[in-house]
Image (cartoon, rainbow, N blue to C red):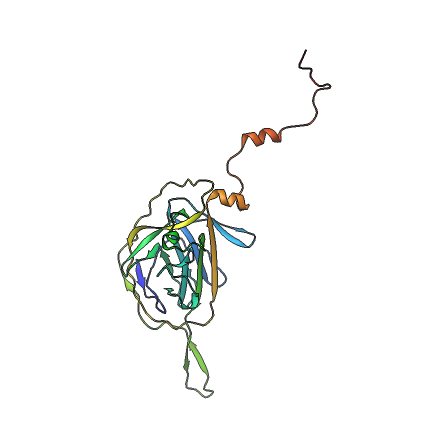
Length: 267
């Protein structure tokens, strides 16, 4: 069953998705790029995590919380907050709230209290960032995770000890039977010189609510994913070249000595 959960610290409500979960991390938080319901393979190269972008194709960001506490996630695409498109400090940013042991899917830019517009891979020139005049951070997805503060409740006893109550108080999740809209599978060819960015696509129903949540001061996790089209990943050395080059293959078979004497063109 799909549900909508409240969000934190000037934070909007999120769509709770089912399906394949994000890869588990030691800190209990997962971030994945999903196309057509499948998690995109990640490649780690020189300390950076990459995924291959597919030109013109919609994608979803899947967030998972495998802990027993609510978390609030400042989620940005191309340096822009997915809730209000602002660029700034994660601590003060609007955030998505994920309940304990929940997985959510964010399909696009939140443009109102009821609608989002889909993420899709495109060129820098056609990106949402270019439309807003914000092009310094294209090609990066980042999630900064804050835990909800644990409530401390005094327990009456001989030693007057204090125990933590980690149960999430406050607004309850509202149920909704509205399914996510299907993602079209579009062309995936990018010109070799094009660099990947994210556009603002079709509208999708995505109701949200606002709430306040008391968070820990320091982030519990920061996850960053870089995305590029295949030609750029090949140039960076993240992926091997996909297409063979007959000319280079021919040159690789070359050798230095064969006949005994040089041929005489005049005879």
